[in-house]
Length: 206
Image 1: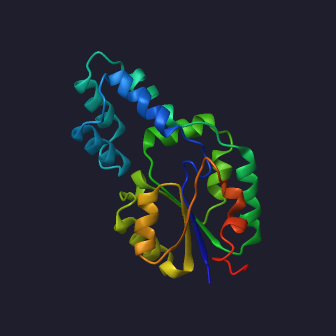
Image 2: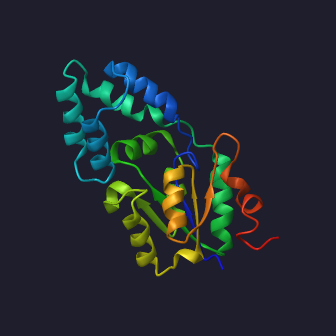
Image 3: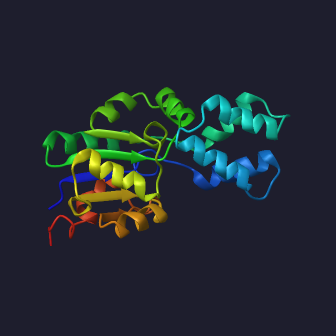
């Protein structure tokens, strides 16, 4: 029996442009791939193990011709619109009280501050969840197993009682390995509002 629905944020509720953001950053830095030190610093920042100032300083030192504002705008390029009908779906789900609703997102302080500035109903969105886990606040990130183990322990749940919804395959793989029910949502062809139609077998609707 499913007791908890665990949602990713990006490309599940809020739209992202991952490829566009990657291309934009590579053009800005005049490189053809992210270097190991950049990948490492980005992961540390997503885990909240360095501050926004530390993060920006890293890129300013690596690319001294770039301004702080240019670095921040490039970093936030990935974030696009948040369709309000998805909030409406979530609010109906929350009002029914049939499941614990949890958000589990890899994110960081700069992205969340930008979302707060550009999404007028962010606070309303957040209050629909029983737990709202952001990687930079809890110091874990997907697809590492410890973030899933933390979530289960913190909510007194077993993996078999949870449906995990995410658009990233490696996160889904880890969750499946741990015994979660999963929905690997394709943001191009699927939408979170079709949850119950798309996951009928999980909810024993067929």
